[in-house]
Length: 446
Image (tube, rainbow, N blue to C red):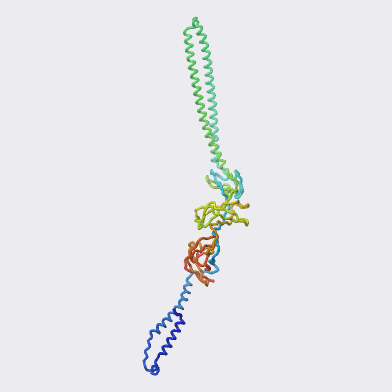
């Protein structure tokens, strides 16, 4: 479309040509009616008016539209420039020194905390007494079991003495029966030798036989009674022994429970937590603290969930300590995501540097790939809005930023890789978009 000056010049030329084509006789005779066709002139005049109106209204429209946009001071935002430079495919994070082996201290039995012998953070040795707990019910129970054991032992001894005495009496009776039987046999032998001469009557001989039969029966009864008594005594002794053994085991178990009221360090290490307070009442299973093995350490870190698909065991990295870098390797990846982060464990490839302490936080990284030249944008809080799927690109004069769809790829702690939607040299708002995230554009004030 021609601009306003072009239209005016054309209109001027048209007027001049119209005047030049007027006949002389028309100029001489002023009373003669001249017919002029106005249609073309009016069209040009209308076109000029429209062009002028648009040229005036458009800036005014744009001005009022800009007034309705959200505004932000340029000094209150962060701006990043798209550039092409080397990209290190790694993830940086803060990692904490923790123990590979930690042992939780808990109350096996309920009770009252009587003494606390060490403080949280202290180095402790294996079997060192840390906390003492009292439990009167358990202690009374142990005393009752000990009393019952003593009673059973006394009863066992009494029964054993009685059985021994009874066995002794039966053995004496058996010996006496054997003695009587021997004497009777000798007397019978002598009388039998006198019977043919008539010195011994038949009645005497019959009485000797009867006496001998009774004596044999008595001896047999004593022998059977002795055998039965010995068998019974043996059975009772075995039963009492089992009962005593059970009582001893119960007492040992109860004593172990009492021993567990004394909380001791399971290993050499650091008492990293101790929640027990003197006078507190504990229930069975209540956690009292934790002892960490100070000789076997590892690193643990929280990493943005964005890196979870690419993180796996065996990836190498480094951490910095005392102006030096030490190699580490990912030893475990925890797939559970909490608050947008997941955990990883890293083991030392060489050794833990001298001087590092449990709970110390260090800067670390893991290499996910190599270094390549890429189109990059400085990373910022804007990545949290819609995952960085759109950004606000600043115009050339810096007065407005317009939202634009973009495609991002890999990222590290400093940059995100631009895969589409932005060109090198363009400037982008990289701070958060919370105040204007719903607007298609934002006005920038200097």
